[in-house]
Length: 420
Image (cartoon, rainbow, N blue to C red; front, side, top):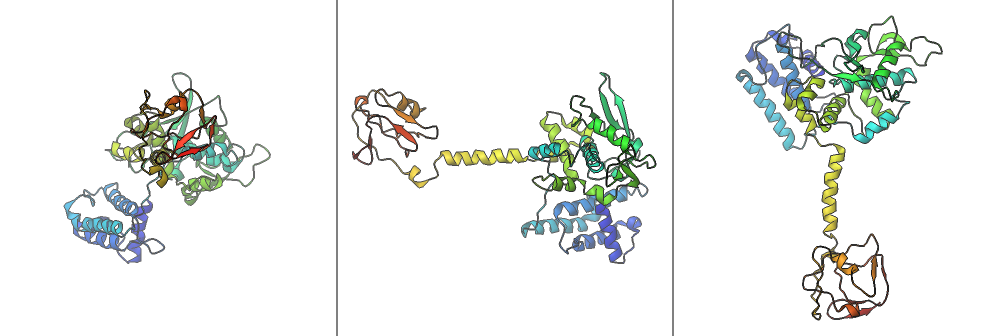
């Protein structure tokens, strides 16, 4: 909806006819070419790839939805080839010039989810503001809602509390909302089937318990579900909320407010909760079709665009794997120096290739006790243990934090003994 408003504002600024819905394809194509080329942010900067794509999709939905029901597609129809060629050219130029800083809606990191759960003063049951945030968070997460879409129009009657076949309490949507993927026309398919179930053993984190507490504190004179919280909690049983609706901008910034107050690792947006729901369900092993039943997505590709993104934990593991390989290979110049073979008498025991440390610790006589931080690397194949009775052996690594008992001769270079 916001993307379409940007187009409407642009029409007004250019003194163009705002009733563009009746324009022929040729005139509309010309108008779109101009819009794609000129639209800018408030700071005068060009929009990113995702924003431009969202604007184009919003205009297309507006034209094809009731009451206009235009049988055109500004994204795919040949009649709009010129405007779409310009659109693609802008995206390519943006990427070529290094201006494409598109950031997809990221799922909330596990550690940040734990912070939210622990921040009872920010998201809790004790005061009007924290209870509003908690209820908003649960409703947005469990029902996979898209940003703040339709939240201003939710009422007390939009939800239903019930019991399932095993007697477990749940909350579900009582109405089928009109939204992006379900505009309400005759072709509209299946709606969301998600439920928010109770957790009676942990009332502090039970979403159904929080929902019922919130409903009991709402102002009886206001039908809206999200009501404006009072500054202070009433001392008696009076409502915690005023006879007023929470503003659109307030709802749009709810997750940003929670991120700041709870001290999260980054500022998340409302839509991040939708990505979080998809990610959690996918990691729990639910099928794409099951996830679509929660979020209301109409195709599997849209869901995969969320679940195929790497989480913070996965990115850490990938980096640590590369770092671990670098460290084990010995990234210091002295660790990579070739070893000069030392001629030694023949011996009946060679160092095993699989575990050189085990071979060293199995030698009888004077012992070597390596610290847990010691790393014994593979000795060159041409180097073998000297006579065991003399307790002479060669290591290809630098000694660190080792305890030597007895007399040890270490050969450095060619037959240059260093007495310990």
